[in-house]
Image 1 (cartoon, rainbow, N blue to C red):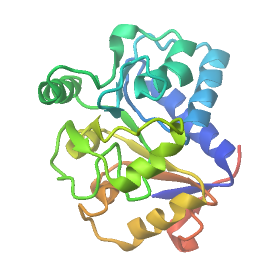
Image 2: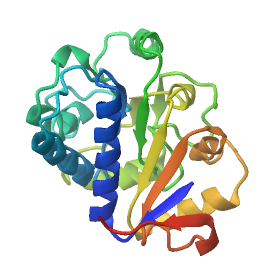
Image 3: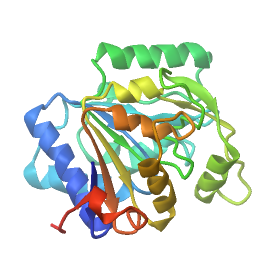
Image 4: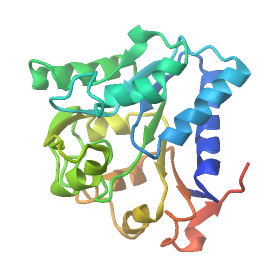
Length: 251
């Protein structure tokens, strides 16, 4: 289901409210966290709501989608640093319940197996947040990734590295590979919210609507998920026919 909001502020309000409602109904929920510019206003709004409502977040468990291979937790562009800066340091989470892929693991393959196994031990995520790349990747599952894949190391496409280069200093090299949840790890979630904002996401959303389920456009697998919502702002929805989405009002 496509749900379209007037702007990014309204998107953030809706998604953060969904997270809050999940916590209220299940205080020990397992949440799948995503990163990137799209998520920043969502996490900021979520932090405000948790503080205002004085919610206990200490029983929550988080699993992060991905991490660059080779970047340590203190590297400014690691996703561990991103989560710490934009979410974890602001609220009273239990550090023992915050799981992130280790981009410097001695054995990446073993680490990936353990990460996926731990997620399965928790029964998968109750709610998985996702963004989408301009080539349709979710997590770092590039086009061609098998739909039955579990957590794995992926070589990043040139398109993905170009898209992500804006986050790195001019003299820094964007890592060539990353650890990511696999497609099956993502599909194990009981509920999925994919969020896309901005005009640059409109073409891939249109391709999603027009395409069959295909590994060439990884996020088309979500068409098979029983509980998925695709949350958009007006710009991201601009190439979709109006008949296929529900238009939501600003809060």
